[in-house]
Structure formats: C-alpha cells, structure tokens
Length: 613
Image (spheres, rainbow, N blue to C red):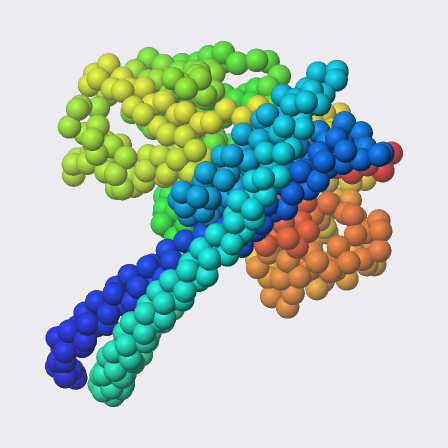
C-alpha cells in the first residue's frame, strides 16, 4: 500500500536474466527437436529394417531354388502346390524388401537393386511356368539353371545390407554424441542463469515478506470492515424479521376484530367508520408487505416454490376477490379466460397471485369509470415456445411516454406531486416485475393518456398432470364439511388480543376452541386430551411453535398426524421453510383473514376425515 512500505526495484535485472533463460531454453528445445527427428529417423531407418529383409529374401530365394530342384530332379518330388507356395513366399519377401522403412537406403545400391529386380524376374518366369494344369518342365529346368548360377549374387544381398547397417549405426552414433555435447553445454548455461535467478528470488522474498506484513495489516482492516458489514446486514435481516412480527401481531388483532365488528349489527355511521378503519389498516399492511418484499428481493432471500396449480380455480379466486372491489368504485371487472376448462400448470401460485393483485389493484385505483379486464390466454413466441399470457386492461388515466420509461423504477409514481390523488409507496410494479423475471417471464406495458393501459404478464407455460387426490374445485368439497361443536381446535397463541380475536372467530365458525399461551402448554394439552386441529403461533415464550410442532410430530400416532396450521406474523421465506421443515401442515401469515382461515380449516378437516375412513 503506498506510504506503508518500499520495494526494491530489481525487476529489469530479473527480466534480462529471464530473457536469457528463455532464449537458452529455445535453443535447447531446438536441439531436442533435432535429436527427436534423429531418433525418428533411426526408427524409420533401423538397422534391422535394412538387414533383416535382405537376409530373409536371400534365404527364401535359396529355399525356392532348392524346392524347384527337388521338384525337377528328386526321386520323390514334392507336390507342385508346395513349389507354388514357396514361390508365393519368395514374392512376399520381395515386397517386404521394397516396403520396409530402410528399403530406400538398401535399394539405393545399384547392385542390390539389380539383384532384387533379377529375383523378381525369376519369380515372374516361375509363376508363368507353374501356372495352368501342368507345369512347363522344360522352362522350369532352364529357369533352375539360371537361378542356381545367380546364387552368388543373391548371397551378396546380405553382405551389402550388413555393410550398410554398420555405416548407418556409425553415423547415428556420431550425430547423437554431437547433439548430447551441445545439450550439456546449454544445460550448464541454464544452471548458471537459474542460480542468478534463485539469488534474485531470495532477495525478492525478503522484500516480499516486508510487503506481506503490510498487506496483512491492511487485510485485517478490510476483514474487520467486512465483518462489520455482514453484522450490519444480519442486523438488518433480524430487524426486518422482528419488525414484521411486531407490526403484524397488533395488525392481526386490529384487522381481525375490525372484520368481526363489521359483521355485527351497526348503523350506517358505525359501518362507515369501521370500513374506513379497515381500509386504512389494509393500506398500512400493503405498505409493510411491499417494503419486506423489496428487502427480500434485494438480499436474494425470496425463493420460489414451483407446484401444480389448477389454473381455472386460481383465476376464479382472482375474480372473486376483485369483483367486489371494482363494484365499490362502480366499475366492471371482467374475466376473459381463453384456456382449457381443466388445466394444471407448474408455477408458484403465491407469487403469481401477488403479481396479478398488484396489477389489478393499480388498474382499479387509477380507473374512475369504465372497466378492468383480465384476459388469460396461451401464446407462442417465434421459437414456438408456449407462454401463459395474462393481460390486465383498464380504462383509466393512462400513462404518458415519458413516464413509461420510469414506470418500473423503485418509488416511482405516475401521480407524484404534493397534491397527488392516488396513494402508494411506488414499490408494487417493481416487485411484480422482479417476481415475474424470477419466474422466468416478464411484464410489458402499453398505455395512452386518457384512454387506459394494458399490463401484460408472460410466464413460462409448463403443463402438469393433476396431482393425486387433487381437488380442482374445492368449493363442493368444503360445502360438505360444515362446522360443528364436535370439532375441537387447540390454539397456541401468546398475544391476548389475538386470542380474543381467534376465540370470537372460531366461535362464529362453530368450532370448540381451547387456548394455550405457549407451545409447552399446547403439547401438554394434546397429550392429555384429543383434538381435531391445532392452530400454532410461531413466536411464543417458554416453547416456540416450531419446537412444539416437532414435539407433536414425534408423538405416537394418531396424535402425531394431527393437522397443524402455523399462524405467524413472520412472513419472510425463511419462516415458511422452517415451518415446513418442522412439520406444519399449512401456513397462514398474520393478520389472519377469516375468508382464508375458514376454507383452510375445512380443507384440513375434510382431508383428515378422508384419510381416516
């Protein structure tokens, strides 16, 4: 680091020495290449490849002459096929001489080449005389006399090959010794240069030790700074988790009691006040959800859970949610479903629902008259890849071209002046875009001021088979499961306001509820009595909900198989993963909505009844 240490500059010296070593190495490589070529040449010109074929040719020549002599003059001559076989062997040895790696050197001798050609001539004549049904004996006797007279010349083949082999060995040995001497000198020069480099490296090592000591001090400082940043990030995550829990816990009581209060006999003024209070609480909750989702997206802690989704039921739930909201503003909400009636796809239904909720909420918020339309269809791109397209169209205020380019930026709002009419934090669209891209898709927008906007979500289309025992349309199944006092629900909840809310809610739903203030009491209650369902808070004193769930799952059946619904104000993905790992059957985030809890309880009880039957 500048100012902390000084380094000795001897780089040019080491560079020069390195260049010398490199040049010497190049020269050495050249000699090694030359030596390699010499060795390859030796392989191609082996002495045995020169001498052996010549000796074999001479031997087979004599054998053929002897066999031909026996065939013509012996009392018991060999068969003519035997003579022909010896002739074939002789011809093969001629080819061996011609095709061997050292044949060029051998045949470069004029006398040897002449002898080989003469033997070929004899062989061809013998082949003609032996062809046909009867050999031509007169021609064979004349040929035998000529071949016997040529015996001395055939013997000279071996002598010429032996002499040539000796000269070849002598030359190769001389070349190798000369190259070895040159390599030895170059190796000595390299050793000298390497000694100089080693001395330079020792010197450099001393300087480097001083530099490393200074760098170590700097790294320690950086490590400490990194740890501070990690701790700060961890503190941020813990802060968000704690704030989520602390804010949602009272929200659960406020919104739950407001929803129950709205269903009691109220005059018009009281009903309006309850509605305003409920809308304000819902708005605050949405802001909290957006801030938590944005933080989770930034830290990469939002994980996706791909699962089979019954698309018609999913869309029916969307329609049922937004029809009343649109009617409150005297708007029409229309669903145009262009897909099959019974279709299952693979997706994260929670995140897909969150995207559509943000887009449809915005469409209703920015539309004063007319309608909002959700169109769902299957499309294909230029590569014929299938996509699920969901277009949210409104007849609202529209967006000008300048604002379109900033629409998906954080905190950007189309209506952002001090006198702005529409509330919001400006996070919903960016969260929706981020989630769509995490799902492998995208969101595009088209808009004209004063006419309206169209937000189009495209997600990968992955068709799936319906899961075993899946209920595509749960409403009939739930209708057959009517609440009654014989159903006993064990509720573990430490917050008194939330206990009050759950008590009234379960009472209205027709269930008999027993309450415990912590997980330890819930485990004890389940051991001492029988229950049909457990509603388990996660954050509790003495024993938390996850520990209690694991304890219950470790019990003997049938108590270990009791449905457990986790109710928690902690909505981060880690909380869901931990709850699932502990063994909860289902997960509901606070504030608990009666319209979500009631069908889920009915579904759990229906599933329990079917599994026991």
